[in-house]
Length: 516
Image 1 (cartoon, rainbow, N blue to C red):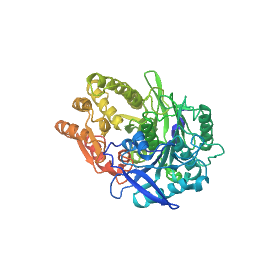
Image 2: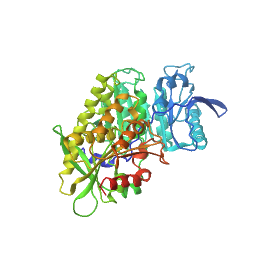
Image 3: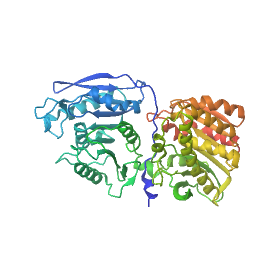
Image 4: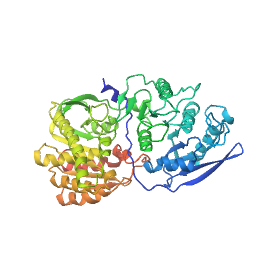
């Protein structure tokens, strides 16, 4: 049953691109004769489209203090991040109305804040290349309450919402399904557990997420529906906890990503969901088979670090046309599989740049590599597979797994035909231990390797360091940095799933290593 839930997942996981954060500037609008302001972090990238994030401060705060606290732009520097400034607003805790805040209900204060958002949306979409399908809103406390009002009254303008220390006000009703991240402090005296529970119940009802919740990491529960409801609990009170912004951005990039249209999804290949065993746990994977009988070659795709990897049906469309099976195994701790998510486990390791710290990091990746070996052995045993023609590939952490398997294959002779590594550890390349480890893996590999990156990748260090090693190994080993794909507003994830960028080069490599 847990495996069937994966069939409804959207297609492309989005991966962060660390890059220089744009300098902020104050922008102004006049709304009903009143000057309104916002602190804006906007990347300067010509005519490219950018995600757009609005972040609303709590009552009594201001745009500068909330920008310093949240710093969303440091986690998503390719997005336009907007910190609007509220106006003096009365409330139960501020009856004099001297503190800045936001309207909570439709019609309140002449809808001045809803009109302000309308004006900002118009400006950013007309003049700053904001992507309409990737527009998001988040807020803290009173700013979270206003974010709920945006969901109620401006749902068509936003792809997803994140609510920190906020609840649905009495009498407010949601009617349009949207992915939401609800961040709850178990000791919050203002947004109490009872308030949070009522809000989560309303969100689940609106989003058709009536089933049992699934674990999505430490203190995280996700409810699947037409749109997902993700709940993060922390032991604090009415606060904005550390890592909140990182969690919000990760949520917007994944659950808030644009969905495939129904017509497009209907034409995508369908997968058989299989189970394979690793470390005595049953793990799931996806097998896409081309029509016909016989033993087919296999393109095995190892997903990246994302908590909820996707079935990769668009990749399947490319490989099935070329007579390949696409095999997409999920590792432990990813999707509905048992186990702990490697990203959370890795964050618990201090000083990852030290030899001792990195040794602990590698212990996590080597255990995950046991899953990759188990999946490889499972597909190689199937009677519809040619076991001598299995290509192992992957992106990001999945590319690391592919290179680790190549290293093991050099010693254990697993039988891999060719290796394709897209951007291995590029986001982690600032840690010099990765260069040392992956250099060792490349040198030990028996199978030919094609190292691929896009020019907009987090770091081109993998190509710079590992590329010359591949050249020394000789033909058909190779490496290449490709131009960024035309639709790369969401980072290198667009490259990973875009055969138009790399298809011809990859097929040429498979021909040269004897696969085609």
